[in-house]
Image: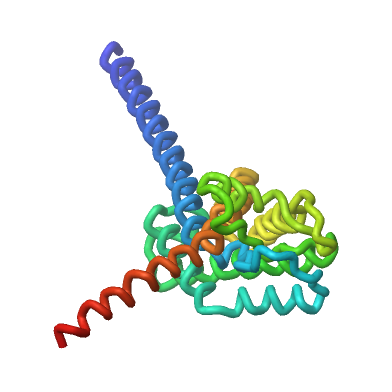
Length: 245
């Protein structure tokens, strides 16, 4: 009788240990998903919330047709496929949302790739065309340039995820971006697998998309500066090599 009680006690301890192991594995998967989301949003750059590297000077308001052209130009581009492939690879390696399976072939990775491209397209469509037209917002990015300090430019670029220009050249809350990424995250429930259709996945997708749109603006803000420096360096090297030829 005593032996039977000991066995029951050991089985109870083993069950509790297995439960704790399962809980830690689930928490680790969630953490990997968050890390993957942040990494992917950094790489998406100009494709995610593709605010163009516009001039610093005021520009005329864009019509709905011009907003459509902007959406079409930024979306039908090789970078969209490249970003989709990268995001799918990160999701596959980290086993994060969308959870299509552990083995990449023949279905899991292609499904992740298709879902990633769909996310990018829907975010651009809702944010840069539908809602930008409805709210009369100009989602094209306007640089601050070298006339401002480094941290001022960084803060300005990131803040454009929640602040934007209007077609009348005013400033207001970036409804097109914030609501557009939310609509895209909601639409993802139509093609994400059942395990990724929950409030936590939706909130994470929405939050990382909004934050990523701000970080993505760092590229058009500083890319012209980088190009100028490269042009200064390489012509000098070529000029130094000519006398030795």
